[in-house]
Image (cartoon, rainbow, N blue to C red):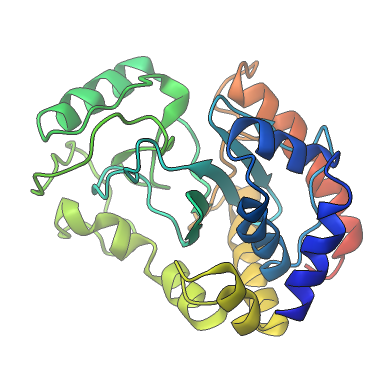
Length: 282
């Protein structure tokens, strides 16, 4: 806990730091809300992003960890309701939830860029009591190698998911990683099982308080998790099929990225160039 307290004290003296200023402006301006934010950076041994190294959304901040095929999302619970735990809403690998702040580590998935796919998925979800509010092609994508669409933007909902049942599996799903006969409700769990298992083995227990997360984080194990992710994204960059892709940034999902795609590509590139210099072994 000493390391996190030191970080918090240092940050409290420099509230003009760009990422922390954006967090206070857009998400939560209470001093204690910074504790889980700083703890997350401590756990993953990451530097705070500078002005051109993160995406500032309407109600969230996004940090694209392109070197690892991961995305960190910082937001607040809307009306006290968390994102729906639905088979076709992308699930986090790890999260920290405290003081009304929700920090999630998400696997990178390329957006489809297809508004028709987004519309069809929104209709499927609405039939199950889930209102997918921000229906855009950039907010949905397919799990790598599978014809299985998921919502990428976990802040794009207005109502809690309350009626669990198998969501519709679209025809033509490939037999990738032996998932052909898996129930739609289990596709994410089965596909990302190696990633989830590595997270459980190497990261602090998900959902615990900021102090507990920092106290139980073991740098060598966290590095092992990031090395695993770096290998998966290297497979993707070589044109192969791994567990992770670059979400929004460098994905090629649009010939000329716009909106989040443009911001993700720009900020992700800048942050990860700096990160590569700080952590050259990974």
